Image (cartoon, rainbow, N blue to C red; front, side, top):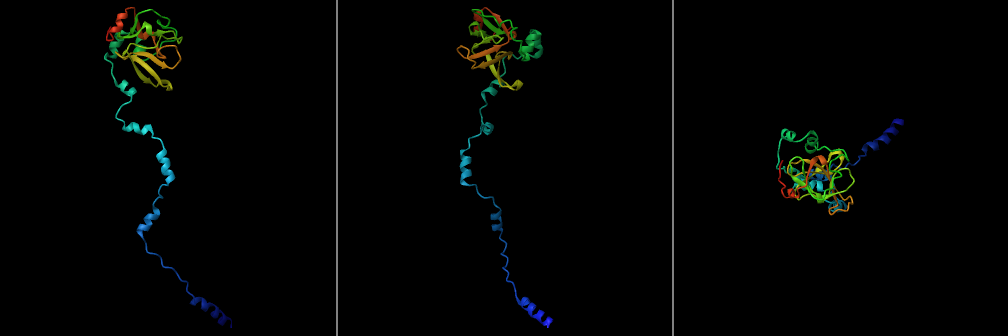
Amino acid sequence: MRSHLSRSLISPLKRQTIPTRPAPPFCFSRFLSSTRKPPHSKTSTRILRAAPTIPFFGAFFSSNPSPEKATEAMSPPDQRSEAEWRAVLNPEQFRILREKGTERAGTGEYDSHYPSKGVYNCAGCNAPLYTADHKFKSGCGWPAYFDSIPGAVTRHVDSTFGMKRTEIVCSNCGGHLGHVFEGEGYPTPTDERHCVNSVSLRFTEDAGAAKDPQAKV
């Protein structure tokens, strides 16, 4: 009785079949389309188009060098060797003119020097740099000039001590003079202050020397 009942309950289950759906054939193109990244949205496209151009990348494709680099690439006419400069300069002049040193504030010979006429020449090569008319009282502790004789002074970018300054050198020999500062509010025609070491200069009362920028020692 019990075995007959079990067979009657189990046999219908054996006769039942569960329909199965055949697996679709593999489609390589469908596989690739499922793995592709979704296209950019219109919003992201608009953002990229509105993004400003980055100058850093443009610099790699620029054919014109910056004025600062172009200036630094120029070599001064007077190309004396270190040994030759040591022969004509005293140790303090060599330290400042050739090694870019700085004299202590308020100790320079020309700090409080205000002649009515004359020319300040380079102490290294004697090229005229500034006239007496360029000098003004700044109270900074170094000789100050609001301008120079045209072409006599060359500017370079100085990034020492973690700051960006503008170094000024003699255009004829490359001797270090000091730095130039702008926008300090001095009542001068250029609103500039050429802060120059006295050691870098040599004064002469001959105003005619300013007409000969190639004068040599």
